[in-house]
Image 1 (cartoon, rainbow, N blue to C red):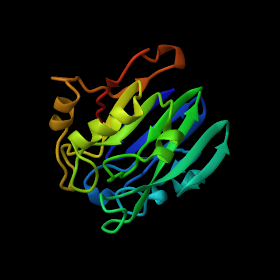
Image 2: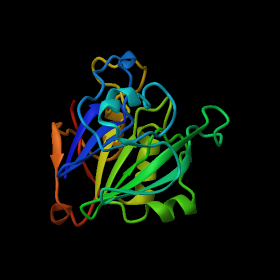
Image 3: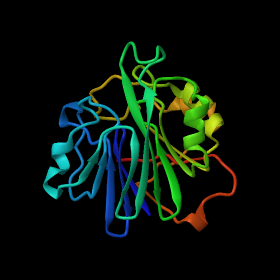
Image 4: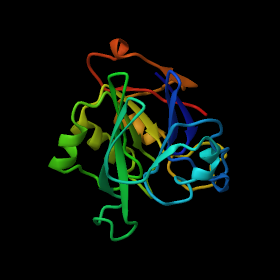
Length: 213
């Protein structure tokens, strides 16, 4: 499995010929939208920095836009409802987090989660996650400190931070530094892609992987 980050909450997860893309964004955020082929696209919510399905429309992917259970090309996906804010959706509505299983590896993409604590039902669905993709930039989602608390609830083996301030991004977000401090990581070299097999997962975590676009 190969994971690539385009910025914001957009990742390409590839297993063999199967390609899944999460939260493709519009060029209006200042970054280059994803290009190429995709078999599956997951959308956490309908904001322009997460729902640019046109970027990948030419490949006619299966688009998943909400809670439910899905299976396509050997990929199992569970979408679960979360809140985009700390007031049960009263400010920014709801978002969908996705549990994605490929090659026996369980990935959770939390989308634009704003609630600072998962409930028991959410934890039960997310249980046993290997790789967690979590927003850390605050303002519209959880911040670095709140993300660290959610990570303690989930206990993943690998954590990939997303949705934070990077060069070129036109949306105001906090940077990565506070999150790394909360996780006890002083400095982390960013990688262009994460290539991993189930046998390579760390026995204990979380191991923080910082990605670059």
